[in-house]
Amino acid sequence: MATATSRPSTPSASASSSATPAPGPRVAARDAGEWIRRATTVPATDTYPGVDELLASFRALAALHPDRITERRIGTSRLGEPLLCFTVRAPGASDGSVPQFVVVGGVHPNEPVGAVTALHLATTLCEDDALRAHFGGAWHIVPCVDPDGARLNEGWFAAPTDKRLYGRHFYRPAGDEQVEWTFPFAYRDAYFDRVLPETLALMRLLDATEPRFLTTLHNCESGGAYYYVNRPAPELYGLLEAVPPAVGIPLATGEPESAHSPRYAPSVYGVIDMRDAYDYLDGLGIDAAAEIAGASSAAYTEPYGTFYFAPEVPHWAHPDADDDTPVPESYADVVRERADGLRSTGELLGRVLATAGPELAIATPFLRAVKNFVPSLTTLADMESTRADGLEERSATVAERYACRHSVHSFRIRFGGMLLRALGAEVTAGTATPTVRRCHQELERAYSGWEDEAVPAFGDPIPIAALAGIQYAALLAAADHANRTERTGTEGSGTERTGTERSGTERTGTERNSAEEPQ
Image 1 (cartoon, helix red, strand yellow):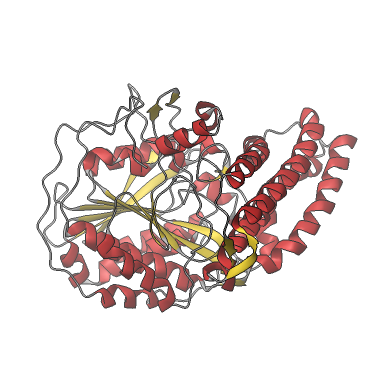
Image 2 (image 1 turned 90 degrees about the vertical axis):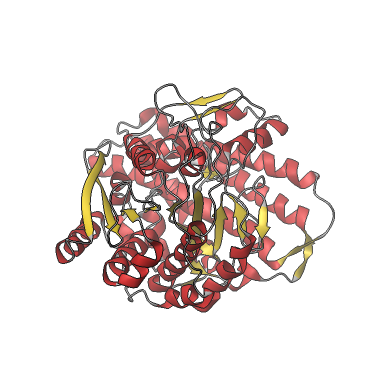
């Protein structure tokens, strides 16, 4: 998912709850096989919808079922786009009915699988009376919470299997411009209250609904599927791990996204918590307050006792992702190899950015992103080197070696691609100086080599319907679990952290969504 920060509190933007809402009516458990079978029900598609197409599809659904789904505006993006929420209610449910379920797509604009999932969920809820009745209450579905960022990725949405097109049209916002990681945060010396308009819109929705269940839909690039939950749910793990194989997708069992998140099962993790991220960085001697931005939606809903769930699915599958066979290299050595790759990548991109930066005339989102991410690569390399020195001596697995190597390819393609877009914007606009042109040519040569190395490492493309099917089936199973268990509210504890409390990710100011990874 993304790197998370902890639930920040701010005088003006944090939510509070004086009482934990009473649990809704208990519902009977459904056979686990029913949720698993639903993974195969998403219609086939070869493309991801752009923002306009996605919202048009939701509005067409609302026109077809006006008595079941309603549209409302919950906010406005930084560039003026309306932020929309579509609500599907069970028979007889009112605005105040419990339970409430919230589903958010597009929290990271380079992760479009959730758009397909959200539309299929809304369609099925409208057409399946028994499913709506089973859950009761209301489902609040936000198809795309960051339309500005999503539009900057639309260049690859029409051809998602083209790995080179993906990298050259890739965009991921800087850490403090990501919706998922700009919720208020206050912990020890860290304090964040620069809440984005999109984040504020989501905060208002969460405060109004006090949801029993919240999911933000995520996807990664390659490997296997995995999940985040905000509290242990042992009865759910087996079901979740059975969903990806049902559509032929491996589980991710290698190197975890975040070193400080607990692993509850081979592919199920505790949600990334920025309090834990802070303590982890501080323990490494790093200025944690300078690295961490805001908290996550999971942290924000702590006072409501919400069960948070995030499914992560890969664009491409690789057989090494879930291969636990030992390899000749030690685990410490593959972590050191990763550190070396991150360091060399950061040094090259940093040199290009330092040389061209003073002569860049256009403040593109791509430039803001690489200024945020590129310095984090060498910091992350140093952290990984330190971590490797403290690891016990054992063999790495195929999956761990693959995860470490793949992460280097991923950062090169992501950050190198965005820096190319920033420099290319100057060339296209006619504002590029000779220095900028030389930097663009140098990076183009290096990036072409990185592409050649990354293409086989990313693996084989996965049908979009299978990816959305995993998210769809898994979120229904997780929502069913939330609907059948008591809330565990943390009344009064989620809004202010004094520095002694702990709780436990898609990111800080670096890029993977954990405190160690660039967001």
